[in-house]
Length: 206
Image (tube, rainbow, N blue to C red; front, side):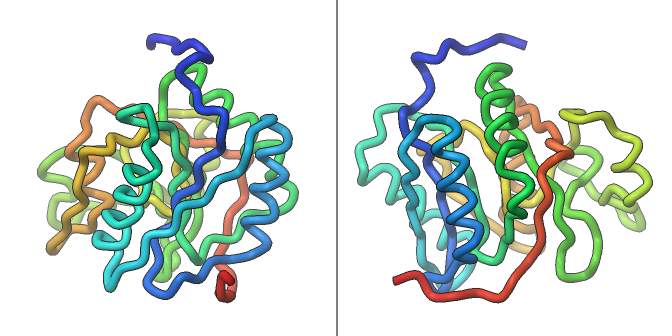
């Protein structure tokens, strides 16, 4: 895997939040402020508001373009508005960001979806998942993986990656996150196991 020089890395930590009501978990943003201090970068947030998640993501990406981000595929942290980042994961997030940039690879942290399953999926292909296929990793399967193991794909609730600003999210019976990974087979995704995430009540950003 090719390594990138630090000259290609932004001086800011760009956190991009899709939302339907301009809400987010405030303790998560506070934890990310601490992450930015560890990285010696300014924390910058971009919120995209929309009536559905694909539209909100596209509005957020337009917000990045409006900021005249120099890179055509800047490093960003996609953060869903209902994700809670544990205080004990601040150092792990900073380390994972450094690892991602050094290895030119995306990193993801696991969390449970509303149906109780893990957000990580085992493989990435146009026919995935096949009828009856168990798409998501079980707890036991995740526990057996080493830190920074490569995984197939995941929801975009907490993913740090180089995001192409020309991309438009789309969805139908499949989610916009699955389409994103299937549209980018060249992107490698790795699990940062030491980052602990959950869901919390939402509070309004002012």
